[in-house]
Length: 369
Ligand SMILES: NC(=O)c1ccc[n+]([C@@H]2O[C@H](COP(=O)([O-])OP(=O)(O)OC[C@H]3O[C@@H](n4cnc5c(N)ncnc54)[C@H](O)[C@@H]3O)[C@@H](O)[C@H]2O)c1
Image 1 (tube, protein in one colour):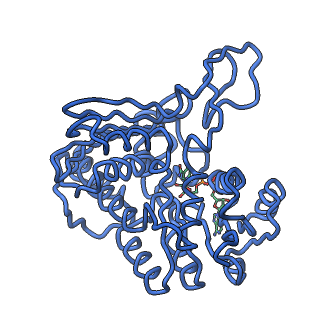
Image 2: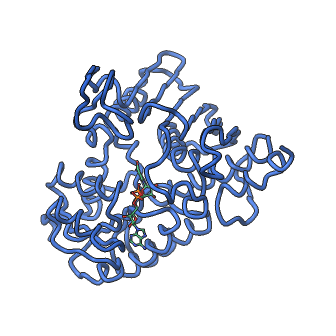
């Protein structure tokens, strides 16, 4: 058992589920996917046939009855994370929950408590902590390359998500800030050695997709840390031209810039187009920047391999439900900041809401518009 590969079940069969399955085929030493569960008839079977996954379920609760499955990855809409986590924990399975952790802080707290009660690991799917280029920046920062860091920037932008549910705030909980800002918050917090977040100021709006969603499609977020450093997190569902993800780190004695998709892409011109360039790229004609080893560059194979090693007790989780909960608190403060047009100090006692974006949609500055 100690040396066998961890048996994994995936809940979900589309975008991120595909990445989970592909990631564990790229790095197959520690874990193997043995089952997939997804409700739409044929979808789980299609993923299973693509990745040679032996067992297929339409009801994930049936999959959880499989005794040999040790770790379950949750790659489903945000509104389902909490219930699925609780069901996995009750079935004794270790959990990898995709970002963002939950719809509410209360859900996140309950997920952590339930996992503890059942003695299973709740690991948080934040691959930016495993992205090789960003890890290199962190390694240099920790070695003192930049001196005392006073500013860190992280941004992730594209033209909007691939599935309908993201645009429905009752299923997603929020727009670009929640969907993509959760990466930036977790990343900057981790980069700063988990220095507590002291305050948040956010500005957001729905500039391009107002006909389609109530959610913000662009956001700016400034976070202050207890150690004195500042983070600037920019997110967009309105940015044309495919995925853009980058960081900048500024210290008293140095600086580094990392663009996740450039420098490991091939500047390419094609009249005819070709198969695939990079996540969310709208075309492969004209000038494009196809990236190679895309998933490895994102860090998901490394993340899931690490989590499997944690299940075997070989490593300690580098990113957990508790980190996801810090992000949830920051999301609440960010939306409340944008809704109130003011900086919010943390810890922040938000009113009870069903989803983070309510703090923006129902905020005083928004009502005054
Ligand atoms: N880490 C990342 O960079 C990253 C990237 C994309 C998505 N995500 C996250 O992954 C999660 C899934 O997003 P996605 O892009 O794969 O969405 P998606 O729409 O592509 O897939 C959602 C999947 O959930 C399944 N599903 C819905 N209801 C279900 C149920 N009751 N039981 C089982 N399966 C059910 C759907 O059938 C579908 O297979 C979200 O939380 C999202 O935020 C993370």
